[in-house]
Image (cartoon, rainbow, N blue to C red):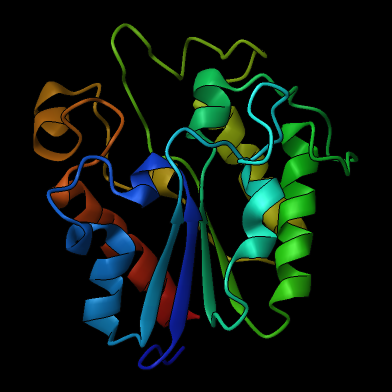
Length: 213
C-alpha cells in the first residue's frame, strides 16, 4: 500500500507508550512515520494496560478505550497481549466468546469494533514480543490463568484471521529473544521493553508488512 501522507493510530501498552527508548522519536511507529512520510502518527499506548477488561483496572483496557481514538486514521496498529500474560486476571475463554471479560472475547470485541470504526482503514495486529523478566520464562511458566505468551500470541493470530486482518508476528519473527543474554543487552535490556535498537527492528517488521499490503 502507498503510505506517504497517511495517518496512523497506535494502540498499545508501555512499549507503544515509549518505555525503554531514549526519546519519543525512537518509538517504532514514529520511526515508521519518518521512513514512510506519514502525515501523522498518534500514540495511544498506556503503560500497564491489557487487551481484556480487568475488574481491578476499569476503563483502561484496549477494549474499553479504542473507541476514543481519532476517527480519521488510515492505519491502525494494535500491539498487546504481554500484560494480559504478565499480570492479567481475565480468563482465556474460547473462540466463541464475545465478551470483553475474556481474552478471546476481548479480541473479538476489539477487532470487530475497530473494523466498524474504521471501515476503510488498514488494521494490523501485532503479536507480543518474546520476553524474559527475572526468572520468568514465558514459554514454560504460564500466567495465573494458565497460558503462555505463545498462547496469547496464537489467540491474537487466530482471531485476526477470523476477521481477515493482517498480522505482524513479532513473537515469531521480531528478532527479540531476551533469554539469550547478548540479545537482551543489545535489544531489550530489562527483558521486556525494547530499546532504540529493538524499536528499529519492530519498525522494520511492521513497515515490511504495510508496504506489502
